[in-house]
Length: 271
Image 1 (cartoon, rainbow, N blue to C red):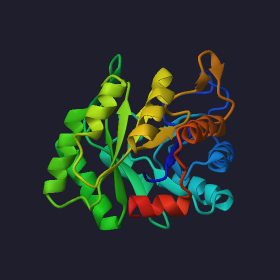
Image 2: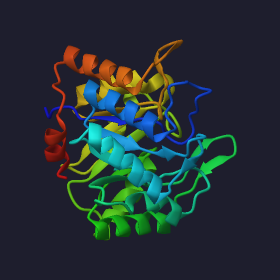
Image 3: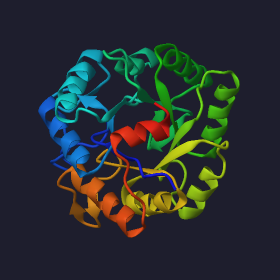
């Protein structure tokens, strides 16, 4: 079985300091959280950025500042900008996160429209998905195909048939938002991928570590972090992203799965 790649989604666009005071907004806070995750064993830093007041932004200058600062303390980490941004942003706003130097080696590509709850709808039309794939392919960026249900896997495979995705494909299953987060669902999603694909699994909220354990056993990879869950266990807020990563490392040790270094992660992901 391949070594385990751990991704740390250190802040997201929705969670706030009111939810957990350790959620990072400033560049200094982003660096602190990225380093805590990297030191604990994360090879990939999934990056959203905020203005200092916590407002989410896809501003390329802010991304450049954050990436440069994180790179100084996590020199070999895989920094993965989000092209999801926040609900209501335009396609071009969202793609601005990839317009930095050097060009990112890895970025997210959301493969369908998702109900986030209440009136919040995260819109990704077929044309949006195709456009993002085209831009990433031209820029030499490998997409992590973000899928919230089985239908989004099928949407990604339609894009692949148009020759817009380089192989091997890599997916991230985000479970517990639009699709339930059970081991049954995880097995179903993993079994729906083309041969040779790699995948990461994300469990939202209380599902974080159940899904992490399942992914470790099934040969997938794991994403954790404040974007997805702010608790270390029921009723106990995590003090850092590093604490969440360390819990995954402990699970991996118990289950006999070594953790990948950034260099090994690049090889597994064909970056």
